[in-house]
Length: 241
Length: 243
Ligand SMILES: Nc1ncnc2c1ncn2[C@@H]1O[C@H](COP(=O)(O)OP(=O)(O)OP(=O)(O)O)[C@@H](O)[C@H]1O
Ligand SMILES: [Mg+2]
Image 1 (tube, chains in turn orange, blue):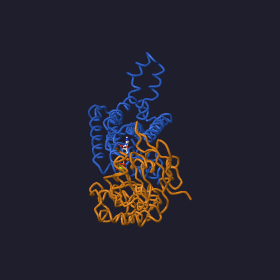
Image 2 (image 1 turned 45 degrees about the horizontal axis):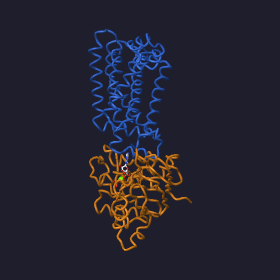
Image 3 (image 1 turned 90 degrees about the horizontal axis):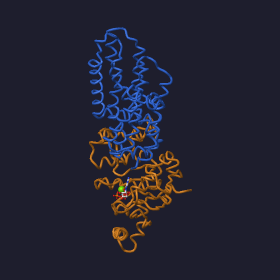
Image 4 (image 1 turned 90 degrees about the vertical axis):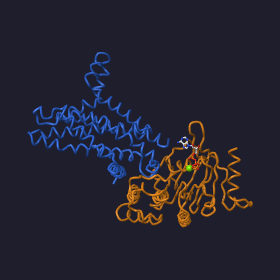
């Protein structure tokens, strides 16, 4: 069976420059891919194309076999996506917002209520369930975005900096959550926290200036006696120079 | 429920969660009332109908509807929620339709809140309520036409001021196209254009409704006007959503 996420020669050009350049990889069930790279490397752009938001300039992306450009709805049904910055509708309450995304995903009645409650339990949002999202702190807002991505228990998760702005306890919780879900799903997370990669990822891709420079297990990267940070600096500073 | 209706429901609740709804409704009611009673000479005419009111509504909508539509897509872009909305499993046109329906329903609510005028004419005289109803239908269709146009413009630009000015200007073109100033000018120079101007004039079509004439051709005109600009909206959104 084909991998849950298949990216082939994905390229995105913005007037004149290439933000994502010929990126290919696949992610299978059970894999957690850490997507690393300096600011502006093209991580979010790749994820936006994978989520079917940004049309690629060239190349294809498939989720569970469905092409994100040709069969967008089928692809998105199997996807939980946390966009960069975890955008949410500020005037809505936490439950209101989660119920909205749940309804669009086709849940009704008691199943909808169960899904919303379960997603809030996973991200520890019960204490603020009726609060308008705009009055929440940054970390809670991010957890609302995360809850939205987990609500329908999708086979594919694409999370753009899921732990950014979370306190150490919450970071730990989210990593535990990802580890627990990992066996049944294909997960891509982008992050700037390198120890997170060692902690939850089965594989790491480092991209610099839109190109994949490394695709290997974190343990393999660290084998040569260097820390992940040294590897990262060596690869990305060299590229930028 | 269709995804478009779920989106519409969320949007409509969003209007009332912010001051937008209340400011819009209050301004609309105050202006509609003031114009009807002063310029429209509501009492002095000695006629039990809502003609003075209906003659001002399209002009009020000319400014108020673009104020509503300018933020339609710009706000989603500013908050980044466009990325969330358009990565949910719904066809893009359903998101477009949902936003339009919410704004249209909202205009319907604002129109419905002018019911005291209707009560007044019924207390003071014996108006033809069928004609009044058809006038209201006409108002709603004008609002829908302006909304569809304004929404398409707002998908085009991130800048809310640009969206507002452009939408007012374009709505004005369709409002004024059939006015004597325009058509007489065109008649003397380019008669074919004068025909087209009359055919696309929102104000001319609306005139029929205020006289109680609901013709299939006028309904078809408004339906295709809205359909066309909603289609433009979907196409433009598809091209510019990620810019
Ligand atoms: N809509 C756009 N128009 C033009 N350029 C863009 C657009 N979106 C992104 N870019 C450019 O593409 C490049 C990659 O951006 P991207 O957001 O993917 O980086 P990133 O790897 O996610 O960085 P960060 O770690 O800061 O989140 C950047 O140089 C950015 O300026
Ligand atoms: Mg990013």
